[in-house]
Length: 562
Image 1 (tube, one colour):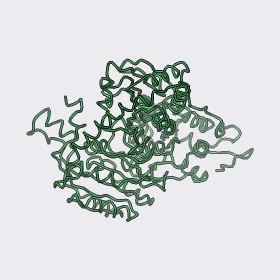
Image 2 (tube, helix red, strand yellow):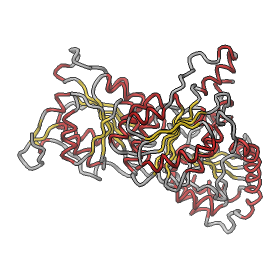
Image 3 (cartoon, rainbow, N blue to C red):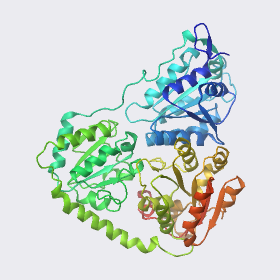
Image 4 (tube, rainbow, N blue to C red):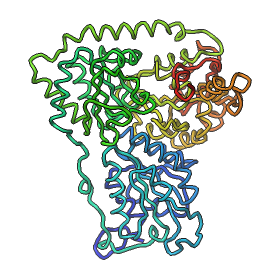
């Protein structure tokens, strides 16, 4: 079957998929094989697209999500029909809530056997439509590349997200004349997604900023999505505005920067006269907006119109690309004779004092010699271990909540967590995608023991494809975030029902699969063990036994337990 694009030749559906992926700049697909989809592999081989085959389709979807976050280009997962597609649903849902652009291609029974009960036939599109930006069936081989391009276009419509295409087996395997197939040309089938925002609203925000005495800004995930890092840094430094970061926005400012704040957010949101929320919704992470002072002027900037003003009234909303909007705001503010930057020095000093007080209150826990190991000691050691080239991935509940207070990535785009769906099991697939996409980076992943269990078998995939990373399991033999809630609601005698795990030596699991592993019971051994994992050059698991009776403040403050 020819994939030659010369006149008079034919091309199969699978090869059309590969050509469309190549046009989008996709250089790898994450997949688990199935008879419905193998012609795509043949096309990928001809187009020079790598195929990374995993052990569970959830991993393939999460890896496509992680690839998109790291590279800024959409990721792609290819899964077979029926259970192959349903296994990927969690990864699609996670990308949907995290606004991560990717395409999942699912197999489907032949159209000629529609509604006849063919192998693995399910209504995939109906199931996935509510958790995707776009979901459709390809109805004819001539439309395959066209609809792949359409799916990518929809993935970048407004706030980005996942698209899904199912391709029936006879559509994928059939060949059509090349001249009859629509094959969109790279760079010619979708427009720039950089919306500028309302110019009048931009001018108003610039004036609010220069008049403000106590402003604060939260830089959310869309700051990294739109690669607005440099612009955001210029704005906060030029106008002397304290910045807080969440999600993928972490690392926008380096640790130690005078405008980088982490532990004083509650105080800032209570005392600010102007609060600017960039690229993050008023969801549970923001207390649905209730944590912001009712007396502050609140401004929200977001890629999605539907997000602005949702759950909380705002004084000004700007729909647009954060990089473009912030650049315009800074330019407008620079036109004022006095930007107010000098007058904000006392405000930054006040917040710095709050940061120092909070840090000092916990300092003893960061260096605690307690055994079992205090979680603050573990995450503090990890923070000290990170370099400028370390990407940090958090996959867990309580232990990752601890890490959010302590671990500070040194560079933009060097923090990955599931996002607002709170999906456990993203750690191995995110590490896989990150190391594939950026082999020059060190990947450091912190797992809860429960989280690692969900997708941990793909540690073997990391070994098979030679994708080294430093993995740490914070092991308390429990789903401790849930355990806390059960104790709080039902009492200690019912606090361990359904959440207690076995004492598993995950280091042995790593070694069994060809990686590097160590057990750590002594806090003094955390740092040396991490360094040995780094030097091993292998996928690794350092299994650290932490105290199950200690909970993160964020766990104890969760609204679901109130």
